[in-house]
Image (cartoon, rainbow, N blue to C red; front, side, top):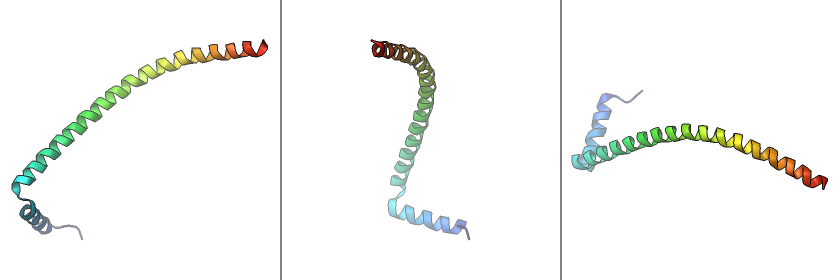
Length: 80
């Protein structure tokens, strides 16, 4: 019940008749460049996410020290 090769060929012929080969070539090139851009963005996103994880861990350690200092100062204020 799947699509046979003849159905795909007829569909391809109809698409070529409607759009023409020049437009299809341009669409193919645009699609290729979009995929290439997407892959590079994903690669850059992974690299920046890895670097952010390292800096976030350092920030949490620094914030943890600040949070301890803040709670101590609040306790001192409550006692005054």
